Image 1 (cartoon, rainbow, N blue to C red):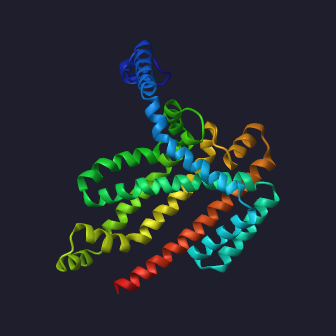
Image 2: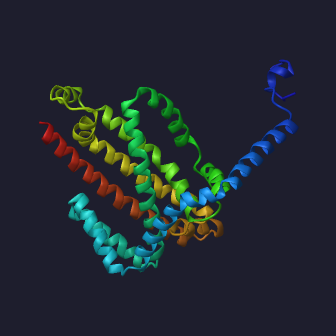
Amino acid sequence: MMASCWGLPEVLCEFPSLPNSSLRVLRKGIDDGFRGIVRQYSDLIDTATAPMQLFLNGLEDAFTNAPWLLVMVILLVIVWLGSRQWQTVLGTSIAMALIGVFGLWEDTMTTLAMVTVATFIAILIGLPLGILMARSDRFQSFLSPVLDLMQTMPSFVYLIPVVVIFGIGKVPGLIAVVIYAVPPMIRLTNLGIRLVDREVIEAADAFGADRKQKLFGVQLPLSLPTIMTGVNQTIMMSLSMVVVASMVGVGGLGKNVLQAITNQYFTVGFLNGFALAAIAIIFDRTSQAFGKRLQKHTEVGHD
């Protein structure tokens, strides 16, 4: 009986649960069955993940082996085209220069490749699912609890099934990052389409537009600012998950942060954390500025 049971019977103090022996048998049966399925379809799993492996390795090789000056120029051009703000470009150049000076350039390029591929895959998955949610209330009611579970689940938990199915390496880490980062893309795509003014939809109907024309000609263009916010959040969550994914073999800055935590290397952890924060700020400022420009453009076009 519990120490403080308010004088109640024991059955009301401790919630009845299955015996430990039954729980062990149940857990062992589920785990063994899961591993058996993975072993049976291991060749199919390897074939399905091969394109991701090639894509990630190719982009990582391109980032790490290209001359640093070329990578810097391309990055600054992308930042300028996205933000059109010289302050953001100047801050990017200073941050990247400091990253290079402290010997973190190669690890930063590895992390950039991982985040780029993860964001690209998350957009490919999240955009169609968000469109389906916006067009079907039934699908939204089904997927919303799944997204709630994905966003509230501790990030470390994602590594368990990923490692069991795919093993240790970059691709399992990439899959874990994508799973963790895709919910904002789905939710904000759905929200952006649903927030499109009904009067605009009715006007498109009056001109005889079909569902496909309304989607690509009206709804998606008008919801682009909200969708860009989803891209922004996906990038931020990918960067935050990179550190956790380093536990299953992902290299880059996340691996260094994990080693610094394990060995209590304050300076190493601080410098790599600074590099991650710098990348996050660069992506955040660029994507937010691009989203605001899209919003102004759509507002002008709507007027």
